[in-house]
Amino acid sequence: MTYARITGIGSYLPEKVLTNKDLEKMMDTSDEWIRERTGIKRRHIAADDETTSSLGLIAARHAMEMADVTAGDLDMIIVATCTPDKVIPGTACIIQRHLGAKRCPAIDINAACSGFIYGLDQANRYLVTGGGRRALVIGAETLSRITDWHDRTTAVLFGDGAGAAVLEVSDEPGILSTHIHANGEFEDLLQTRNGVSLGFDASAGLGAFIEMNGNAVFKRAVATFDSMARETVADLDGHLEDIDWFIPHQANMRIILAAAKKLGMSMDRVIATVDEHANTSAASIPLAMDLAVRDGRIKRGDTLLIGAFGAGFTWGSAMLEF
Ligand code: ACO
Image 1 (cartoon, rainbow, N blue to C red):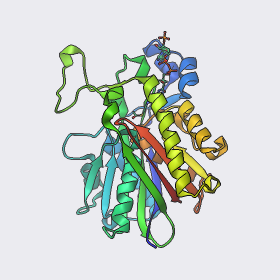
Image 2 (cartoon, helix red, strand yellow):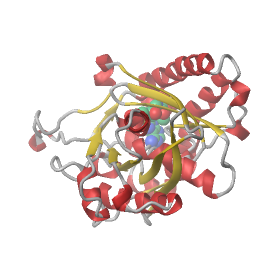
Image 3 (cartoon, rainbow, N blue to C red):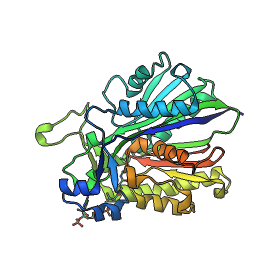
Image 4 (cartoon, protein in one colour):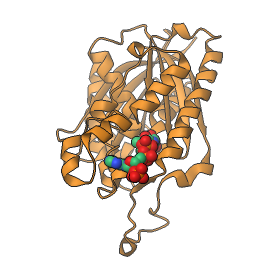
């Protein structure tokens, strides 16, 4: 059987760190409130001269180094982001140029926080059906650029960063299953009110900032992890104990705890980075995966379950042997 297998993983976080204490000086909030409600302690923020492509490029280079592949080996580049450098060209094309990967297709996917799983799903299908032998999937975000720093209900939640994975065709098990979904009915609960086609209305004080009904999103996210757990149980014929590590999207520690409980996973088998990174949307899962691979927790042959939920709403999961 032919699989798409992750042969390299990498990440990058901007140098600048913004702690909860720093936020206390910027708005009416407290370290205690943020930790209690979200589990977040700090987040990384891109410098003025950093962009989504520059973060993604560094993460990609780390992943390619681990996989021992060069730019010329790549047959596909996918960048999952909701904060692209520009409207056109796509961020994937910008990264492709910097890597020197001259001819392979390069596309962006916007599925918000589920973007990396959408990218894995697409790359997996492309590789196992003979589209190519190697794909680079990047999740990269500069959410600080669409954060309203006057809105304490959202500003404390987000951070910047990038993660990347190289997938290669292999006879050895790799991606075992993927499930991706969307339901556009809930657009109003988590959105930027304005944008390119809708236009910007700076005079009305409305920029393209993230707006969210936190309580409603929280409830939906927890319920969605429940349905994700049921899909996964079906894939495994009920053998959830076969999963070595669960890597959820890192939005809120309380959502992660609820998701782990639904899956019956003890927290010592869950990778959580939300305390250090906050919510980095499409970058959060590959960032967490890279950290746990490089610190030795995740080993070759381990079975991983990854799951995400984000604006759209979009959600998805993937099970893979690392
Ligand atoms: N500091 C201090 N107080 C605050 C802050 C803050 N940063 N933010 C809100 N509050 C206040 C509120 O004004 C409210 O005060 P009130 O009772 O006087 O009205 C009180 O704290 C409670 O507010 P709630 O919104 O009820 O707090 P909740 O416990 O629901 O936590 C949170 C809010 C953290 C946003 C939570 O709802 C959540 O995590 N939701 C899901 C968020 C999420 O995961 N979104 C990302 C999806 S991913 C993507 O696609 C981008």
